[in-house]
Length: 175
Image (cartoon, rainbow, N blue to C red):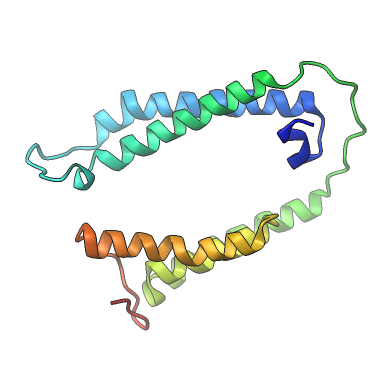
């Protein structure tokens, strides 16, 4: 079985075309970022001593990673079989989908309200965990562990290694 079929349980032909479209979209986005957006809108002083602290480093890194993901999606999709007998499609519950969309909007609004009060790190932990539960992540334990560890590691790096101020909340402060 192909990896896309195992994860989605859907038709391989649909998975293949979806992966190709997503991959091409990611490649176009990466190209736009690298060729137009970053050079045109991100400025950087010429005397930055540490490349990681340059305002150009992280946007370029994310653009290159986006391009790599897009290339990986296209190459993986091209390895999938081209034809397969159609399967009966699952009936999507539009009410549940709109409900999840509404819950996501509430989470986004709550994020904007919570960030000044409890800070960027704690808010990010909560939002990451809530989004993992909302999208019904298959690896919930891993997602919840990452919801705690990733923001903490990023805080430690940026606050203590790179010396960048991370917004702290009014009620809770990290060292």
